Image (cartoon, rainbow, N blue to C red; front, side):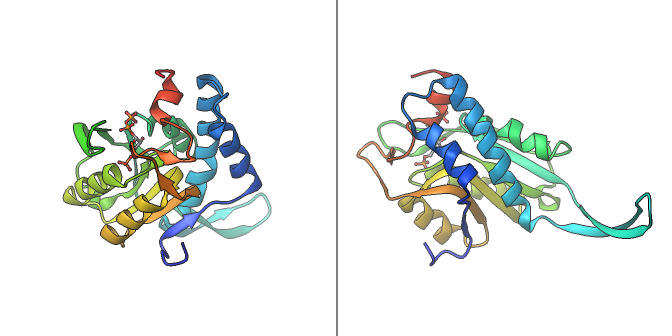
Length: 211
Ligand code: PRP
């Protein structure tokens, strides 16, 4: 994956542990949601690396010093449904963020994304946009999401995933070389239904108990 300078694999003992809970088929939806929430905290913190900051002066109890604070608005965009599993974690770190929504599901026959709901803030060009979707499989859903965000003016975009499969990575890094991608794991491939293998199953179904 060294060919993709914009792909960042977040590989810490803590992220590996959260992923172990998510991958285990015995994990029920309550624990699955909790582990996804906690993994989002780690991944979103990494995805803030490229956020613009500005230097300001503050007085500590002892002296004046320069500190950095995040400057400019942030927009979180969960891709429904599974992206909702990362939203509360992202908002815990970025409580002032605006939230936009991309509603997409994959047609089970073709694995092509079908758009059913879009609600994004105006003037997306002013925002640092963070897309949340636990799964990057074929890359169809993310590619459609990124195209939509750019159509709405977004220029500065980072994407956060629990698991990304090689075919999806190849596609989105080729089609969107200006976007950064953060994932806890890179999985080798997809099965005949375009599910990530080994992956963690259908993240939406496992988060919300609709198996
Ligand atoms: C899953 C997942 C991604 C997409 C990834 O969503 O959350 O959005 O599939 O697949 P792709 O890279 O091949 O497009 P799904 O369509 O299962 O919808 P859901 O989140 O509502 O369950």
